[in-house]
Amino acid sequence: MKILCIGRNYVKHAKELGNEVPKVPVFFMKPDSALLHKNQAFYIPDFSNNLQYEAEIVLKICRPAKHIEAKFAHRCYNEIGIGIDFTARDVQKLQKEKGLPWEIAKAFDNSAPLSKFLQKTDLPKHISFSLQKNGATVQQGNTADMLFSFDEIIAYLSQFVTLKIGDLIFTGTPAGVGQVNPGDRLTAYIEEQEMMNFQIK
Figure 1 (spheres, rainbow, N blue to C red):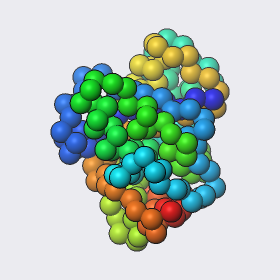
Figure 2: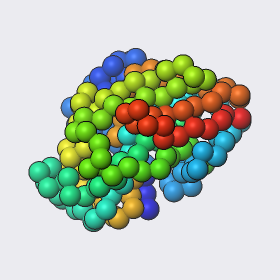
Figure 3: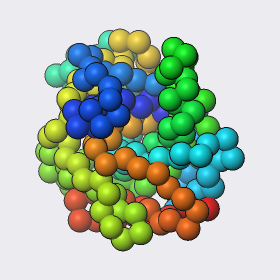
């Protein structure tokens, strides 16, 4: 199982970090050791002084896909959840300044808290989602605002990486990312349904 993550898939988020809006999907990967399940507490790693949340809709791949066309990509997933792409923003900034890969800032242990999954047939075509920090909404998004749709993402990724059953795709975060500190609590929603609720330590 692998985790593929799409960066800069919402215009306002790309702009809030001072990044160019991409012409094709930007992707990176996390190992399976990045997953954090069942609302377990997240411990801020000691190598970062600016650990930030990024709430994202997550797709679970249900059939293998290689060089698949976008018009067939909807067959490749039937479950949808929400996750957090935790990012050591200070570390990432240094990597970007040096032209080096981001994984050290993105792929560390437990950097991908993940919710339970819902059947896509139970969700609208355009999915709203949100993240609260200590009860206050900090991120709100809708998949209608993505630069690249689910099907376009799957088609693009499958040109480079064979997608296998159980693979996860984090589809990008909307604007509103911010820092977490010990004692914070994050609560994530798809539509009006609470999907994830865990503490930062």
